[in-house]
Length: 221
Image (tube, rainbow, N blue to C red):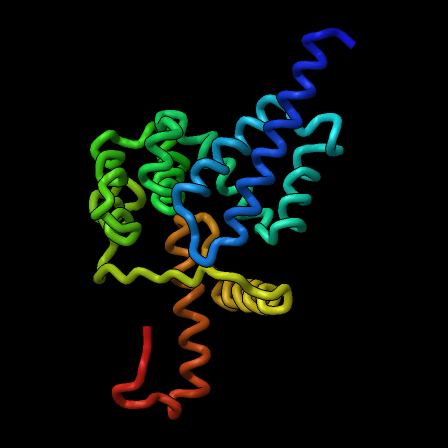
């Protein structure tokens, strides 16, 4: 083994250890560490692009699977972080850390929709600690940079969280049924339009069966 190869192995092992150490810290935190997850996104990108997993894991997916099992981090969640660091090439690690991963994921969607760099004025807003994720989404929707505004008022729904496999299967089956119930939802329409139609269908079906359970003045969203 040459000296350069030996050095490469050492660097790879150090980088993998760094990812594991940060993953352990994040998994143990009571609250999401926005800055920590942004850092993790760049580390995952580095491990992927430099193939630091080679020699220790069968492939990059196997490496992510290890993080998932060891630290209870969702695999799709990890892929989301990775894609954010890959797609938002215009952002430095410092900027991503400053805005936090939640707002960065919103900007990633803007980039994926337009295929272009996110406008600098939007990045500046995202870097402002006073601007929340909901503020940023509304700004993007109203400006048409994420999707074209529709009729109605802004209504932000966020059901992100940890679900059991059984709960996830139930939700996916319900969405599947709502999507294909006659008349089926047009899958050529914008993704946000499909999601809204699915949610309204599920809500309407439940309300049709349990409308008498509504409590005047009771809690909603």
